Image (cartoon, rainbow, N blue to C red; front, top):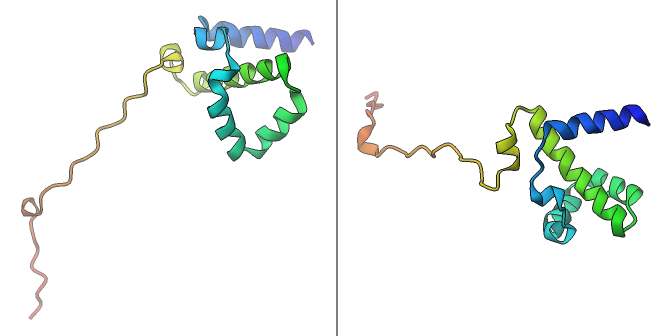
Amino acid sequence: DMAAAEISAEKLSKLQPLPTLLADFDLDTHVGLIQRLLKVDSKLVEMQSRLSSGGQRELIFWKNYFFHCAYTRYEAGLSIDEIWSNEPRASRPVAVAEEPEDFNVVNTDLD
């Protein structure tokens, strides 16, 4: 279908340049992650079994899956650098609890 091909081409153009990890997708590199995904997502299991039958179709299924995950991140507002970065996202610093002597203690004795 020509409309679907145009939509795919538009999505692909927004995420260029594709990193080597996706452009030269290696299924063996992602086996551990794929196994974890399949354990927690029954709909993904159903889709994967319906659309892929091993071999090249399996490779294409997972390459497309990870591409669409990246596109969802793009739609959520992440930059291309954030989407394709190999670096973990910096988390906010964990607040350090104050020492008890830093708190003002209220006397609760009502006697």
